[in-house]
Amino acid sequence: MNKSLHTDDLTAYLNTVGASAKKAANALRLASNEQRNTAIIAMAAHVRAAQDSIITANAEDMRLGEKKGLSPAMLDRLKLDKDRIESIATGLEAVAALPDPVGAEDERWTRPNGLTIAKIRTPIGVIGMIYESRPNVTADAASLCLKSGNACVLRGGSEALRSNTAIHQALVKGLTKAGLPEASVQYINTTDRAAVGEMLAGLNGSVDLIIPRGGKGLVGRVQSDARVPVLAHLEGLNHTYIHADADPDMARDVVLNAKMRRTGICGSTETVLIDEAALSVLPGVLNALKDAGCAIKGDEKARKTDDSLVPVTDADFRTEYLDAIINVKVVADIDEALTHIAEYGSGHTDAIITASEEAASKFLSSVDSAIVLHNASTQYADGGEFGFGAEIGIATGKLHARGPVGAQHLTSYKYQVFGNGQTRP
Image 1 (tube, one colour):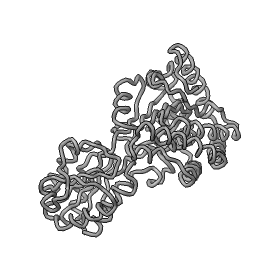
Image 2 (cartoon, one colour):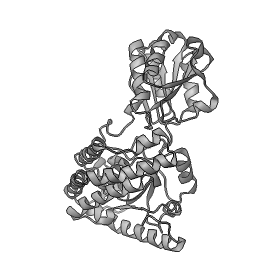
Image 3 (cartoon, rainbow, N blue to C red):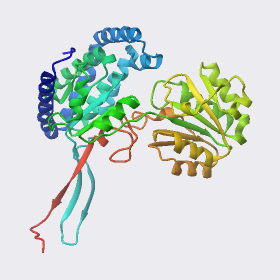
Image 4 (cartoon, rainbow, N blue to C red):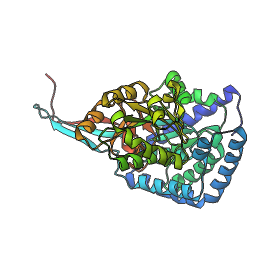
């Protein structure tokens, strides 16, 4: 179904998808953790078995992506090989090994009247996921939703259509083996952009939560047009701040990793801030970045240290490069660094490099981002690194969930109240 449909046909098709997802969600709510885990483990096995067909599908996506002129960063996010497919499979198994979030008791207390109240985690229902480029998200989203007892409706970007479809076919085989409804994980494989609008409208009341994962344009549209709650994953305008008390070798190594380990992920650092008192550290950082092939843009003070730097602009500080490009700005002190992050950051991930516990404490408490780090690379902004098995995205809002969204964050809760005949006076 990869062709555009007549609007009425598309609406009817997607409403059917929504209805079947809602029915599947009711079944998943009652499914045991063992049954859900069996499905996820079977999904991993089928992904491995389908390796050749997934790579073939991905090769065609890559060919068309190059023809369309996708950036190197986008192509890197799109690319699948044997190692990345194995990583998808092991990621599925890691999710299966997580504690069951469904039915977990957050807290329990007893009132003076004898009523005992328990707060219990429960599935959200049907989760709509709209994402771009990275086909591994298909498996991550499916496994995390399944682990948390939710059905999901997935809509990936057109650039990854063939890859996503091949992965989804493997996932469905895992569901079937475990005796769970195939509609527990559905993939919308039409390239018609109207499908996004239908999902944002809620598929006739079936969708309980929308999660967008992609560029600023996609997330902005979802937040603007959605008629159901949204758990947003915004761009990663991330900073690494080198404080006056930073260890030079640590600063060099952490910045290099934060930028260059994988430039195309949302946890990549886009701007380095450095105290004027730490300028002696800067040449080592810049040389390491240059040796790794990174282009560097600097403000006037940074360019006095190295006149080969390209002048940085205000627009650069607001750009998520997702590429081997980085900005450098010299600041007077931690207060100016905090002001810059508040102005230009996206609330995603920011780090400080310092030996000063006082400076670290001030930074960690002052920066209003989902993830803040002390003496560590921003590339740790990842659900797997947090012990969540995988993530469905990095939530940058302030309600329900922030940071890496794992299975436990895809649940809501209800109160179970236990009495012995109490009546309210």
